[in-house]
Length: 295
Image: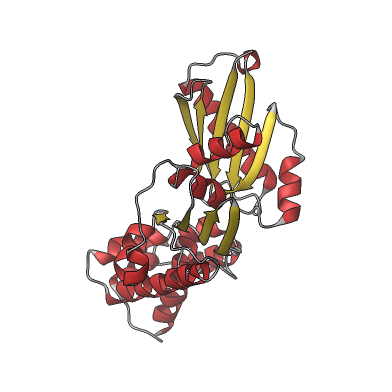
């Protein structure tokens, strides 16, 4: 029976799956909704199933039962042991299943399995480095108590400032006006959203695009917020640097990263390198290492 290797990257807003055949060729890809197992183990597993099904369809695989399926998963929320345990207890069709964090597979992928660091600036923020198989990390303990500088944090800060503008504490800016317009200028709708969506990073992360749009209008509040986000990212890098004696290459990942990068310190910028592989490919590297197929 032919082996198929599936790599999954599950983040706060999106889950992506790819499939490789035994020759290492990518033959399918699928995308689904949020993959944070802390938010919902069953919900994130459903996202994995949907993404994998789409990948199988794109690979023109009619009957998956004719193959031996092996899956490597990098999912947000694995720092919570109970969430990880609940996720792994869900029945699945895979011959092999390996689970680690989305940051771990991203770090493996971007450096092609070699030593290096990453800082993911997406819905949340986490730094991780792998040096001779030793893993160290900084941040990424979950929104809202951690993950400062990421999309969810940006969305929350936009909400806070918009409430203040509505009450007259601060002046309206293009970004805050866009947030209020997003809720049809209905303060009750905005209040309901803020309370119903508490501690759900994806919900707040979706608001971060408003900040990006406001940059084109030279909104000083948007720029200040990005500079504050960059300061948190600089702190992540400083924390990682203290955990190694070697100057490691670093790759910035996540949708917010390009907008934060101009405000980072020169020391961090000097270490930034392009990625070699993506996160789902890193998940397959992790899977194959676990299976003893690569060292």
